[in-house]
Image (cartoon, rainbow, N blue to C red):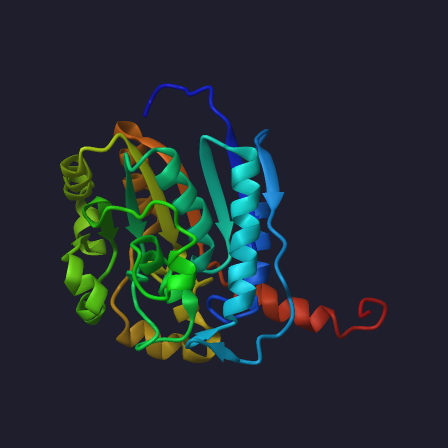
Length: 290
């Protein structure tokens, strides 16, 4: 909304990487926090294990116990601080579970979730083993019940709005089919925010939490993305659906904020491949290595 709010905002840095099983997400979150504008709001980093996962699965999920423990730590911070608004700087998409669940309960369901992402993240263990592809399913009460049970009030499926799913195969996921979600492609919202705004209006809510997965963006404009990993970049540029421009995503979020009370903003899946490679190189040099 356009007017200023005198309400507390908590900035959470959650360098969680186990949900995507890529250690590079840890550095991505830290760099994202460094790049974000400075703030007077309280900033807390959620403790995240750096122990290797070894691809071990429990109930079909890689690093399940690590993820549960870290999610509970994020919940504890939120319940202790009781912020009115939450900014999340991740990490993989699984970082959204605690803050979005907290906001759904705080606003008693008067909350829409705008999921700006190339993927709906509503898959289950029958189709995937990395939890970052399942996090929204947990917020809906679907999938693994150990994660779903952490969500005190489930999001109303009609209050979930997708923006950016260009791959038709993603819409064939069982949970997606079950709830028949609304989606606006990157091509559509590149032209106008109107469709997304109308879909939010249909929910009747006054508060919105926005999930912004950087992988929704065009990898030719921004390369710190999963699909832009150097060894696969040239092939993926040819074969992947074209993503959104930075300008169109920024405009969409700004347009939503002009009409609704944005109480949550999560930015995830920053994968700075060049910085990660340079970090590894520097750690091997004399006078720098441990």
